[in-house]
Image (cartoon, rainbow, N blue to C red; front, side):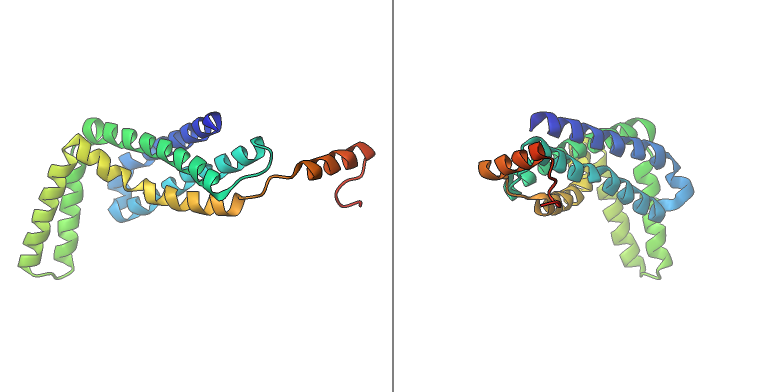
Length: 191
């Protein structure tokens, strides 16, 4: 299990990181609304590896998989992927894009103003954005907040994968019958 979890978790983290590195620097051009769509699409694409990892584990363990074991494998892959996502974001936020929170706050406040909100609502939202920036400037809070972006998606993919891929392992008798048919040259549909 360890080898499968590490392999697919690290590949998923690499895909997630690569997609973030490729798209986030262009958020000024595509806008924050479209950036949100692109970001979650990248998260979903990277977390599809959870499904493939659970399937690979099932095949390597004799073809059987319980929901619990599939869930555990998927969860571990998700955690590795999320760790890669968080590490990449921390690097980008603190080294490449230290003005990201300011830009997002300005965009968000302008969006509230454009909606016709009262000055009190705009002031309240401005305070929220200042609080958000203070939290994002704290590396531990930033990491915790960032982890909550991909993790729910990964959890959903994990549950679906474990449910879809669960399968009882063939019994010894069934494995013997399959081997006997293979020796006789009879495939499963030729019986």
